[in-house]
View 1 (cartoon, rainbow, N blue to C red):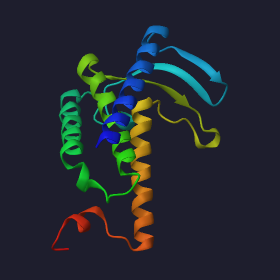
View 2 (cartoon, helix red, strand yellow):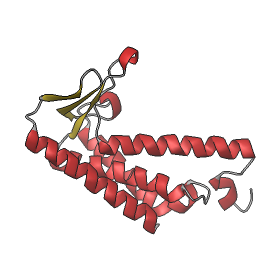
View 3 (tube, rainbow, N blue to C red):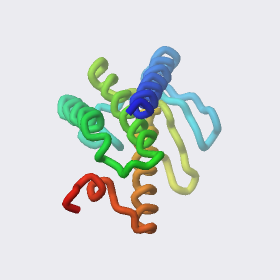
Length: 164
């Protein structure tokens, strides 16, 4: 749990620091081209979740984030099989959820600032460190589940349930 909490704290702090720098350095709506055609810094506000879903539902998103944080803290030992990566995956998720929750509570929205253009794939919705951390955690979790299934390893629920 120490690794999970430490990593989560670092991610949340880095997320808040970068968002603070963006809010200080760029006016809302401003865009700075870093790598033409690929990467910009922007100052945007997202009142929803990923890709703007649930826009304007700040109270619901705050409650949902709090429930996720509580679940991580109270059930972290049963959420994944006891692998070396469990604390890292859950720490990334904890930090990302906490970082965006802080914005929602204090500002009423989440500050997004990373703006990617993926060539022929189009424009990716703007995001922040917390979003990247959450997506990385989900991707790593999916990878762990796929690898465990290929090796025939039981999942965390089967390992923690004495009745199988």
